[in-house]
Amino acid sequence: MRASFAFGVLCAVVGAALWGFSGACAQFLFAHYEISALFITVVRMLGAGVLFGIVLLTRWRHELTRLLADRSSLARLAVFGSFGLFLDQFAYIMTIDFTSAGTATVLQGLNMVFVVAATCLIVRRRPHGREVAGVVCALAATVLIATGSDLGSLRMPAPGLVWGIVNAAAVAFYVMYPQRLFEQWGSVAVTGLGMLFGGMVALVVFLAQGVGAIVAGAPAGQALSIPALDAPGVLALLGIVVVGTFGAFGLYLYGVSVVGSVRGSLIGAVEPVSAMLCSCLWLATPFGGADWAGLVLMIATIALVSVRPKTSEARL
Image (cartoon, rainbow, N blue to C red; front, top):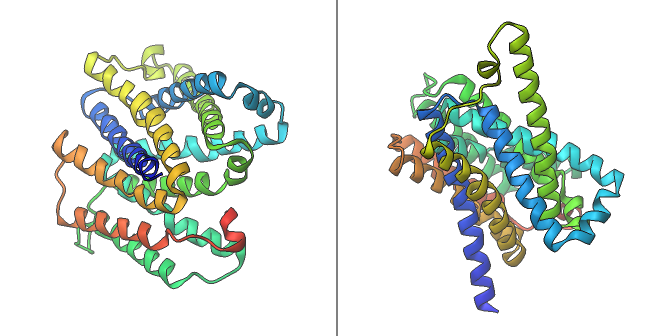
């Protein structure tokens, strides 16, 4: 029993760390290639969605058939994939483009503020003391990272901060919205099909953007923003799809199924640590004292708000 629990913890830790690694891969691509955030999002979501689909067809074919026949669930999955996963993945990559993988991942922790606010509104209660403290820590972390402790200036590009906040809101949505889908169909099926739906939305947006540029007179190759990647670039893109998305989600979700959602949320704090370490050690991204202080405060936010919900809140 202890060995199984320890293995679950290990899977969750590795999965969360691989999410951080995927952010560093995206930062590497932006630094060395002319590649768009939308192109990365299309490849990431469709690639991971196909891999999840293969797993579902192999191990859960019957459940997948039943799910595909349920129109109500498919409609909710389309919403989840479009406004949750797609918006989250695209906004995260855009934040990396304007800042760095470490900064983007720490800003993503602001989702806890949106989760707390939405929960309080839905169940009509005031926030608990730990939640208030968590929100204060999250906001303080954001101010530190955005200003570098110089409150009179904005250190990071304003679009990076805006996309980081959009990313956090999208994460809060995709964490809260699919809970009943998870209960009915399981996290693997919902996440896999959600990736496919989100990937198709990303592809439509990508093609529409390209068509619009072609109509405006741009060459087809330039309009579609298809990058010319050498071997390191292809490996980085594969790292995002296979390791940082499919592998990360699979390992983390399995780990959470063993250790529980509360411990899983705490273990998820490994992601910003991983992203900042990968950026710092691999890509030589400079991080100052304010950045590391913001990271510590954001981890404190996760610890403060990751308490087991009671009564109706357990379903949110």
